[in-house]
Length: 128
Image 1 (cartoon, rainbow, N blue to C red):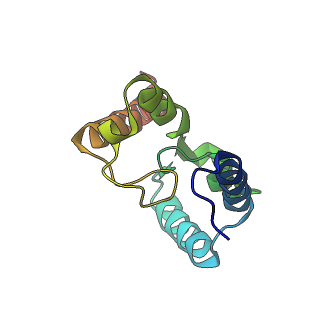
Image 2 (tube, helix red, strand yellow):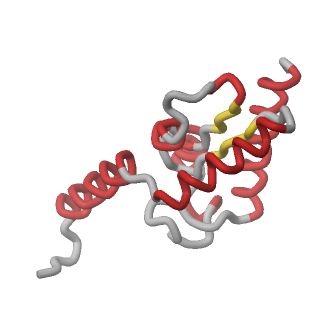
């Protein structure tokens, strides 16, 4: 039964989806990350792991629990995008809702994403 305009139901399902995303990690994705990290470690290259806009960084970090995290740069895009859409609008940064709570970026969204990644690398690698 679907009820149009049921904000409470929408919020409940959004919270349930968020909870599932925090705990579930695709085995294929986890394997790909570990393989990539092994390749980079052999070459003494730091892994830059970037979370999707609007998503919590913790599930991404959980992929590497028990490993040396000092050789990984994690880029958190949750707060920067949530703050940006609160200030402007969702449509200013995304063209769709591909991920459910985020989408494919507009040019402005891509710029915000790229700047955030670049700033994280500058800070972690070059102390700037």
